[in-house]
View 1: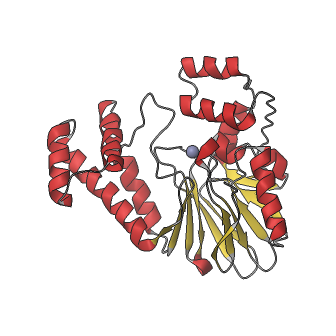
View 2: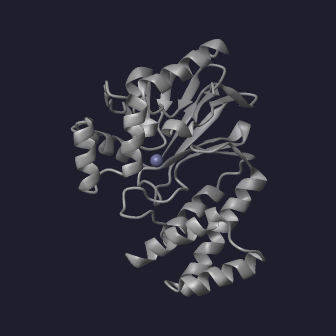
Length: 285
Ligand SMILES: [Zn+2]
């Protein structure tokens, strides 16, 4: 299926995620002077598709891209975009480390064996880039520590570092005038641990940070944008699992029992998976 640019609000457009090769959402925030791109895509091809779509919509003046975090699927398109690149200082640090890597099948398999690469990411990199693999990692030009404000003309973006289990550099982008919050992958569990993990304290800190931004639409990178109502349902669930797993610790049976009592139904598959991530997070602390 062809993937095309969608309009999210009056001044925000996005290219939906594509699970085929784990492509995340790419977005454009359009001020009267400048357009800011959110995330660089997972390859030159992905970045090019996005730029072509912007062209078709006659969206111009895009001179800068902000990265939500360093993971390959959000950063490997940076070189193709060839724009001023803005990211958290840890994003730059992680990308610097990755610049030394070899991306052949053998090198990827070797890193997976040593626990340095996530098996799913390795598989998706192979699929996205094929046999003829050319991966050029470029570093951000501008970095920040806590937060940064970008004025695009009539529209201001707050870029704020929040970290979390998924990646220590995760940053969100809030557009107050459009009431949109871009969350990247920050709410997802860790992927560079043996098993995916959530740690209670990290999730609570993250939810507190997110609460400070009053949005109507929430954009997570690997799913469709969520309304406030749906997003609140999601954070309520995470909050609830924090509380219940703090109480029951590694007692999986009682944890699940109390959770289904509180929800008044059996857990669905996503909820089961979230519980497992919390169990994984507890077992290593
Ligand atoms: Zn990620």
